Length: 401
Image (cartoon, rainbow, N blue to C red; front, side, top):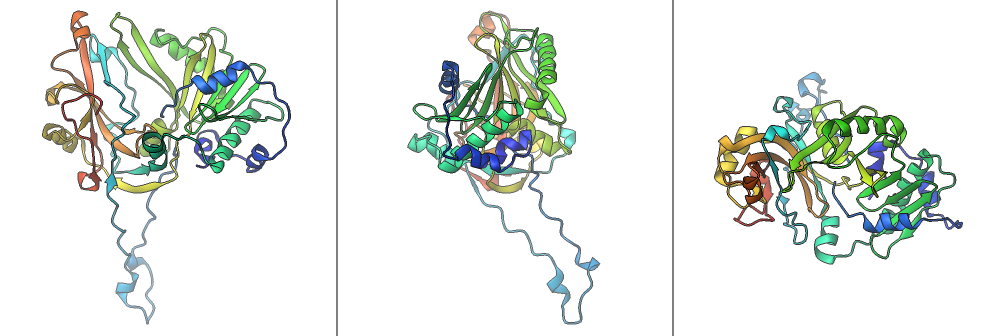
């Protein structure tokens, strides 16, 4: 994997940092217990490509002069090679449980996707993630290669220098969760194969508790952005605060606070939202964690044309979908919201765009019914034409699809 994965989010990096990170020079570095705890306790999670993967423009042969020895047929552009079939391999380890929400009404929650149907996105790339998926699902060996370790160290050094840490020396911790870590004063940094995390003092007056109000989280997020703008590193940041569903105890919870880069075109913004977000979390009750995605998007299977929303709805009615709901799709009149997103858990062998439908369940979950609330499930339809997909784990009446 390449260090540019993180740098797509936070800028370029001097290749000298890689050399510095892997040189034999070592010195004694104080490392707080919290650094190791942060490296060990933080769960591997999902969750960077800003390139557009656009096809080159083809020149119209009629605009080019033809030499006397050249036939007109020689100037015609060759057709693009056929797109490969996408083999979706179901994870044996990555079942996520029921992906659903409880709320009085759907409007009490927030799912701030940047996608709009009016964006008219025609194509999106599909990414290969088979190397990481095999490690997680088959070999169960998450040990990175030396090149991947160098990339982790380089990312850590780059961020440490942005924080003004002198002569940063990452420490390798490979006993449990393979990662590099670094501690300096109030700062702790860790980098593993999917995330770079920076632990910092929480700015005065800020709170990121999941039970805080939306307004409190919004005000805190913008204050954190102002305080740590250089660390967050986005030029045109957009804020997304997600969920707002309710627990069985009746508490409303906002589970995700993130910034992402506004792109020049909708497709770029969508990919930034799915792969290039900067997540804000509270850590140890009072500290701030800023988390950067480090997924490897270097291998593009192809740029695939997308089906329409109406075609995706027709697929729902046919049963061509993936869901963790216990019941089949209840009908088009139960749809509350639709968006395009990527399913991008690191155990997925491909990162594929889907239409994600938020659907009111015909039979509310028992806990929701007892509180007089409704429950909502999610149904995924591949946004890529189905002739390019094989192995999709369609709903079979069981949870954890």
